[in-house]
Amino acid sequence: GQQVMQIPQYQHVQEGEDFTTYCNSSTTLSNIQWYKQRPGGHPVFLIQLVKSGEVKKQKRLTFQFGEAKKNSSLHITATQTTDVGTYFCAGNENQGGKLIFGQGTELSVKP
Amino acid sequence: DTGVSQDPRHKITKRGQNVTFRCDPISEHNRLYWYRQTLGQGPEFLTYFQNEAQLEKSRLLSDRFSAERPKGSFSTLEIQRTEQGDSAMYLCASSSGQGERAFFGQGTRLTVV
View 1 (spheres, rainbow over the protein chains, first blue to last red):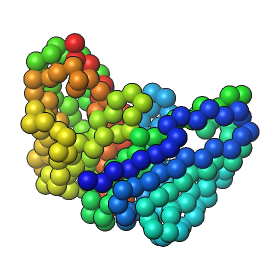
View 2 (view 1 turned 90 degrees about the horizontal axis):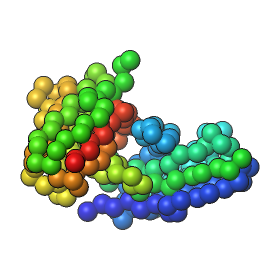
View 3 (view 1 turned 135 degrees about the horizontal axis):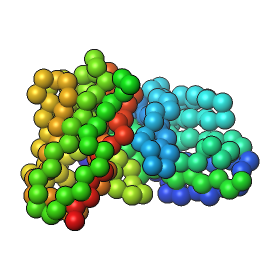
View 4 (view 1 turned 90 degrees about the vertical axis):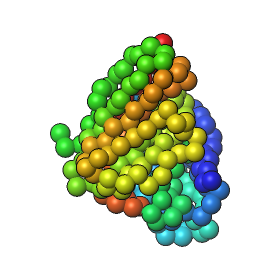
């Protein structure tokens, strides 16, 4: 079955440093979504990528979808303490399918 | 608040008891998902509905778990004969259709003692 894997599991950075998390799927995805979960909270949608090779930016966050639509990355430039949380990617194997989440990357930012 | 709501927020039950959780999705959302999340892990897919039809159930899920969405609106997740390994956060999410973003509820935290 479809599996979505993320690395690293944890990332500790100094405020101002950059952060990247990588997501890989065992199968080709129709789209990929990214979510953020703050400690004690629930996942909150950040963005969706649909096209092969697509790149989207949200302020300091840059999201990429691989050419083969099997991998994705999230890059945060100059992290801030407000970026703390766990970042999940989630993919649909086909357009009508279920949404499968990766294990997440927990980001901690030291001020 | 017109977001996804889940009830109860917390449930403590003795091993062997049955529990039922409720999820009210965002109105007009035809897709509803149930996930289970344990500490340090991502949401694990349990099942999902398109309107009242249950389209898929995780093969990892035992027969003790059942979910319904009788009128295509709210959904219930029942766990029979609970075990300590069932302790987790149970998350419900809804979306407006296939491939669309999911909106999560606050979750129901289940503790089996």
